[in-house]
Length: 589
Image (cartoon, rainbow, N blue to C red; front, side):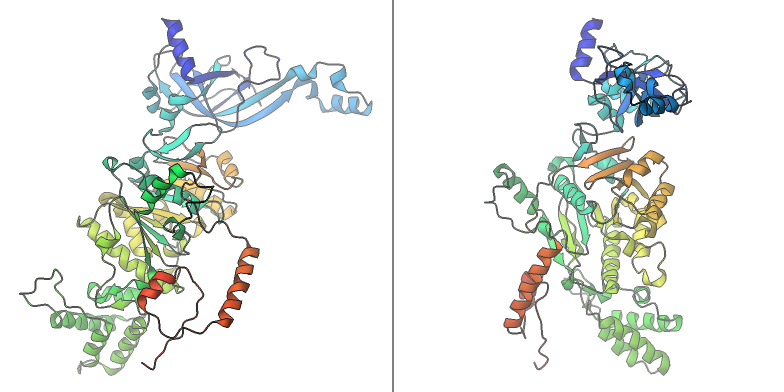
């Protein structure tokens, strides 16, 4: 019976013998934090052919009195006693004598592997017994060191999957580094709390997000998927909705229907057409958007807003859901200017502040689009702000929208949602004072949003400039290549799970590789992000290609007539495609 169980275990390839624990390697004996072992081969202890091949970042298992001790490979070193004495090696070299011709030095090469311990699986079973893979989900602290001479096994298969906390029905974002194991993250563990994606420019943040969107939008309806809201500052995600040439040989025909199904769940909104409903604003919102408003001016503004609400209130017989007919900033200015009891200097200054806001042309009598139109279950809404240059205007729009989203979610009027915030350090700065208009609302969502299933995914290339209040609330962090020492030090201080070797690896990660750690997994892992299914019709551009395109556009613009009148529909349909067309407003009408 025992032999049969051993055969089952080996056929499933859950573990594989790779070495023996040694004592005194590098003057360090096995302890509750680390141990070293020598790589061995099933055929000969002196063979240089190491089977299987071991790599940094792989997971090892050793039997102990407590159960199974699991650790991660941190360092692999080569050792050869024939070359341990530097003076001897020098003398042979001076004599022009090859040591390998006189001594069997190649047979004395050995690989010494240093392992950092992660935890212990308490079990009364032996590896020769049939073991339930779910046993590896329950980990405990290491209480006793492993014994020298014990066999070391490479952890694989379902044992490893359960140990790391991966989910068979989870979001497949790539492969586990040094393994052929799919990294499938459980949606609830990943998004029940906030997430931070940190990487320098060009490391693959946008690519990773597009893979996440593919996985979320491809989930079966019965598994449940929240609403997705992406704030796109530079138009990087337009391709997700753009049409592609399905006649290209590069696109697999079997993927076309799946890709179209995903694109049907994506909606884009151009930030140029976002309008803020003035009746939705309080006097404190105006002060947040215009910090120069003083306390006496705020008091007069409150009275003006109150009068406008009374003046524009609908009759009781009205069947509309809204209780107000709608008013704009001009109506508030009129109310202030007609107040004879107000100090003239205070009056003119307050009107000036309001007129400055009105010149932004983002305030109107009614907000657009509706919040219910932005947030839909299992669908992605992309707010494209690339057409808006003013950072102040972007911040005001985002504060208005996110405030309403959070309010509606707390009231249960909209489904659970996830906000993906690109360039988060611009909207959630560690310091920014009154100019950081959106900081307060995003920090509020970071602190309280989890209770109402209003989640944040903060994407940033400068973690050191990101609010520590918000970053500390991100229980899962996905870190890609970062080389800035200040950013690395900041990440290290905010995460206890990072080891010194992990920090060193982060700075040299290839593009498209990431370290995932936190609540989404039991232990940090390095992952190679999978290939994206949705093609990018624009592809990767080089600076020479952009220069050539600019020259062509310049030649075209010099030969065309200026456009004097444009309908809003024309802009909505074409503005995203033609970023540099010339508009001349005709004020004669």
